[in-house]
Length: 145
Image (cartoon, rainbow, N blue to C red; front, side, top):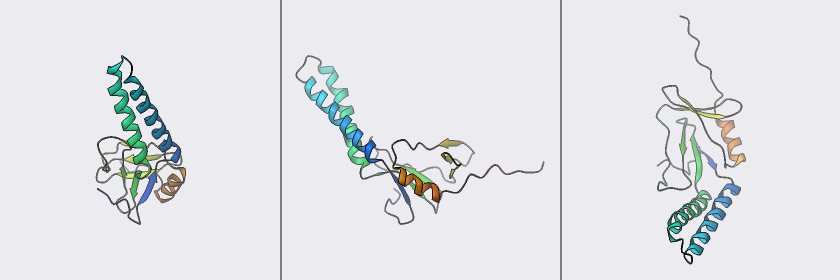
């Protein structure tokens, strides 16, 4: 697992609003599941309770875990999930390139596939720091045929 505390790594966290929204939604679903205990609709209890528990745990975890971790040394972007069974980060493939094209942040794999990095629910100040550290987009190399 990559080090979250490295001084050179740029940490992009969740926004406080997104974290609070996950916690509130999780709490509401847990209350709905508890209320359904007293009604004849018991089969509804399990999915609502599990979803509420996942959202509540993810919201609490998002206060302390980053959403993305960019390592300028390797140029890789590690993705951390707010909720789910994995608390480890998922690093990108070896040789991936992360860049900013003036509007969006992209991940480009070694085979040339380009994927947009979602910034929904992230802290805008952290994104501004990440954009400053990212290299600008370099167009495809022009070669003579």
